[in-house]
Length: 82
Image (tube, rainbow, N blue to C red):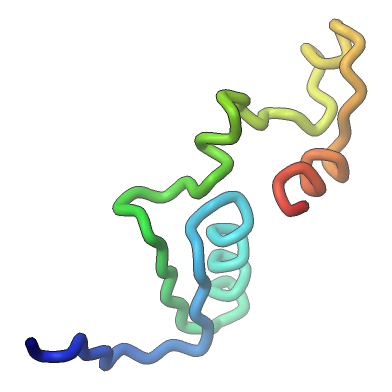
């Protein structure tokens, strides 16, 4: 068997195309870096897509406030990164 060969180069390599990987890749690209995103899946989305059936649309939306759900962008960020 011939070993796998890698001949691509980039300034930044992002591992994972989830809730943190894609924004990191966009930020790096906006700063002028060449970027490669590597993921184990064929589609983007990461583990946030299958986090126990919950869809993270938080950050303190009007619907959350209506139902007394305390949330904020900081809490949402911690939920996705902890």
